[in-house]
Image 1 (spheres, helix red, strand yellow):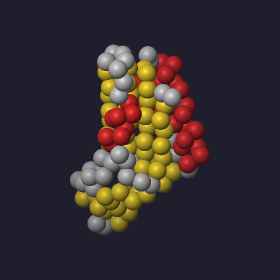
Image 2 (cartoon, helix red, strand yellow):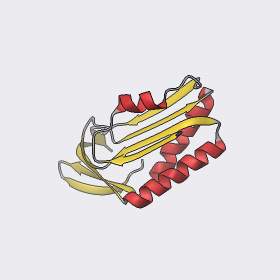
Image 3 (spheres, rainbow, N blue to C red):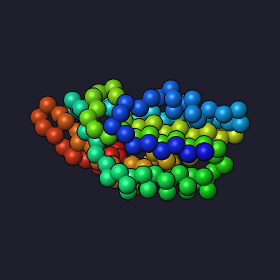
Length: 139
């Protein structure tokens, strides 16, 4: 199996993601770890709440992975995304890609996180000191 996709309310295990993506055939491994930052547009973030339409989210992640395998000579792809309430410093997303060469791993990883944020039905609510705002889970 060369793909691992997970949508979960549980804490993401970064080390297990790295352990899974590692292989002797891989000369390049790129890992993107998204974290909940403490501010957005100058406002203090208290927490984030992620919601997803799970069947469609998994389907869209599978499409992203399939396209990445078609476009780049990558060996393995991992996408793990959290749902639920996350505090500052917690990890909502891990993307990992392995390839024989680093360029393919870097390019595929960037494509995966950028496309995930644009197409996968995952929404986030940012909680600030003066209230909450629902936003699409992209920059």
